[in-house]
Image (tube, rainbow over all chains, first blue to last red; front, top):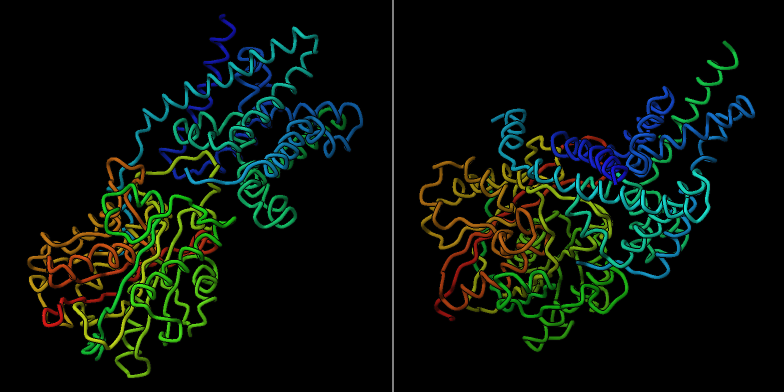
Length: 118
Length: 146
Length: 334
């Protein structure tokens, strides 16, 4: 149970920080997402984010910062294995499933649904 | 009133959404989505997946669910309520890809669905890939060259 | 100087308004001729839906007077879509000579002034002025896909789904177009796309002041003075900008964008916007009041925000414009 409290806290706080940025600054949703991904890569690169993941589990991997973490992890692994070329192949390898799923499913949804006014 | 004063005057008087209320909503919805992610993660582990596979499957499942909710017209209502609570988790990424794909289907598969799919999520992928490549270069220099 | 265009032989022979479901749920519902529950208007795209709405509105206008396309000399109208396609595709089938106008949300007054001027000059006998906007096509073009889960700020506005049209001619009828004034562009330096009211308020105040200076009229000569789509935010700014400079304005000053929706009960933030806003509120609501003799003089000030997504991304400011039209009840023919 404590595990879920940690997940909830970490995930919730990451979202709250973004909400405050949206409401208090002129930052749009797109800018928040971009900043979070880059932040994820940086924090992962300097070794901080893995500790957040160890503590918060899905609370750290589900937010888009975790996407940045996955990019960095993939890159690190690829550079370790193949050298400099890994800098080009690793990021998308580490996130391939997420990106491909988003694309494939979105194509599917576009066949099945049409846009409606609420 | 000159333009600089006018801009300040209109910005100052403009009502803003309640940041406290929005933050509370974002906290609970965002935290809840992450907990669903954790529950799925534990489920996949229990089914015998290793940690990495389980983590990837969680992303795929949430992307599927968020896209489906987008298609049936529920996600935008949740998003309106929760703000960053649904935007920041991977659900927001899935929604940002599914929404323009669905809306622009009227312009056909090539010029509509496919070309508009990344209108909003494109910057995330570009900046993410860019920063991971730079990180890879730095990591290479630090670990292999120095 | 001849900025105030006076008309002595231009009458509103007929009027028509078609709206969507959000407008139907609003307080002015009873005044509109047609309310369509289907946001697609029976078509399969938002752009076709808006054209179909325009098509229906024009057909209704002509059928009310049992007129055919051949009886109309000119249509002056516009909308918000790129290259004004909602209007041109909506007018296409009629075969009536057509001038496409773009004045952002001020297009309705622009159309009335243009058509009236053609009539005044004797170039045409009977013309139509119309303007339309559609919530979904506007969201798609200017903002986000409808299914995108984002939040809007309290100063943002809700685009009206609606088309309003007037049949103008020299045939004497109870409502007369007395005069009109083309507004000038006022750049107030606003860059926030979610605060169009602030971007247009300065232009509205400028046009109103200019109109009263040019026309020797007083606010007391009117029963209603209405801006087009400032919304609550822009309307309040406009009131503050004007202060007490126009005597007697306060109690008759209103805004179409505030009237068309229930700002508390409906989720529309600061109110309605779009070309259709002042078009349907004027054609449906105000002119009904004039026709019924509830009011005798109306000053409409259709407001527009001049921008597109490209200029916004380039960091350029959003200019405002406001055109004035004076509608008068003509008791002789009532």
